Amino acid sequence: MKVTFPHMGTVAIPLKAFFRTLGVEVIEPPPITDKTISLGSRYSPEFACLPLKINVGNYLEAYERGADTIIMAGGVGPCRFGYYAQVQREILADLGIKYEMIVLEPPRGHLWQTLGQLWQLAGRASPARIWQAGRLAWAKLVLLDRLDRLAARTRCREKNRGETGELYRQALSWIDAAANLPAVAAVERRIRAAFEEVEVWDITPLRVGLVGEIYTVLEPAANLNIERFLGELGVEVERGIYLGDWVIAHLFLDALRLRKDRRLMEEIAAPYLGHFVGGHGLENISQTIEYARRGFAGVIHIGPLTCMPEIVAKTILPQVSRDWDIPAFSFLLDEHTGEVGLQTRLEAFIEMLRARAEKGTGLNLSGS
Ligand code: SF4
Image (tube, rainbow, N blue to C red; front, side):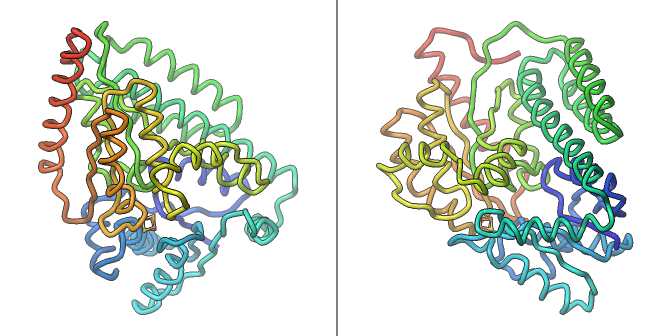
């Protein structure tokens, strides 16, 4: 069995650690490029959402490298994620590609099925080895979230443009290479020391929340490197979703029905949206209100074009924005979205936020 999985941000790093510790051979798809996106788009239905198309591109490229088994997450709810796996299976079958597909359904309601699938994947690995694999993957996941937050805090203050981005790329390779828990701890110390060395301005950056559909928020190839672009404009970006937080909430707390944040989120969003609409539609409303309460300058909302939950959120956000006095910019992306067009609109939005904030605070928020 040669296992592959779709990219989504940095998720490949903990997944590789998990499967390789179990002795499963992993074929990682090459990094997402224009070729990946155009391959996936060519063979996917035109109105499919962008993540599905990029996933297909990943599978085709991993297949060329010898992968024979796909592991992917399943989904429930009103959006199309619930039948992603079936559509992708059909696309690959029509192309004559023989892939085994293992779909891990969300543990809530499928806990034993999911554990059974993981057990099957683990092959002959002992429980101790499975525990070791899980702990290593988890440690990397936690460190990746810390790295993302550290990079966001540093990038908007850096004196030498691009230094944080370069360090971030190196740090990813250090985390990827760490073979065990002590090595992960050593890498964390190394990362913190390296970030201390980055020369920064003593400024108060504009703070912006980035909310939206999970794949487009986490995957730079899908969001056209929005976090890096905003950071290098001198904006401190906080995401509404970090991978580790999402895993805790959806894989553990949801499965055990212990998610208090879901009830809170529903209460906050209730005046605008009274029920779950799939994806992150509801979260986006409550997170925008939370960012307003915390004094953020604005919110950027992104998602794939044709994504139903994000279309619902996009329709509601102008009212939330007026009621809570927080500017919100929504942008839906597909494979035709041009980087320069997006950046021009972001620059205009950020300029507006700066003018607004300077008027309100008297501070100079123009960044470095
Ligand atoms: S949340 Fe949006 S992008 Fe994701 S599967 Fe559902 S419709 Fe597609």
